[in-house]
Length: 287
Ligand SMILES: C=C(O[C@@H]1C=C(C(=O)O)C=C[C@H]1O)C(=O)O
Image (cartoon, rainbow, N blue to C red; front, side):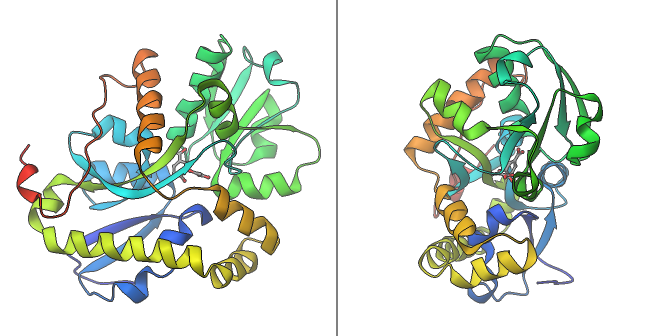
């Protein structure tokens, strides 16, 4: 999709994790009124905040920063209960021994970076030092005790890895809280909802249909993931089934707990109110 004068510019995370939501979307939404812009999560977060894209998946942390300007689509997210498989901390000593160590964070992430800080500082009472770096594990680990990777960078390193211990942050979060974790949410700028309410509703329907279809007919998507990223068909079946693309009461509760910790630890300046977009209730978007 590349339209020159779209009414709505939709973001897309350039990782495999969002494929189910987009895989059948172009067939379902053949419209010259939308365009898709593919970037790493932190670039999408910035573009949404600047208004150079109008909607799409962003880091759930970024929604916490700008929640007054956005609404969230219900039924769409990238979440997990326990293992997520693509948000991984690589370390050479057991986790308890590195909680005061030097941690490298990927420039691509916002949610997982703050999730890691909650885990190390709140749950393990650690006081690590952090530095941001490009997501390249060998370079990151040259002067660090642990390095975080997300998305396809994490997946590929988990296949290659022979030397590091790996901690899955979805598993750690569930272990300490017993809750779901939502890493990405589908946000829409409130001004876009006001300007194009029908188009927003059509896009929502197409995303939801793609999600259902990708769940029912995953084989093409999985073959494409194997061809472009690598891995086995079993790996991708497991990956897409372990991730959850819904945003219901359980995911909401987990995300609210995450925001509460972020606020308590000073990562977010104020408590977050999660606001859901509702079709035909455009009048409610008044602020
Ligand atoms: C499951 C993932 O969720 C993501 C993690 C994000 C973050 O840490 O900011 C943002 C969007 C998602 O891509 C992943 O990247 O593998």
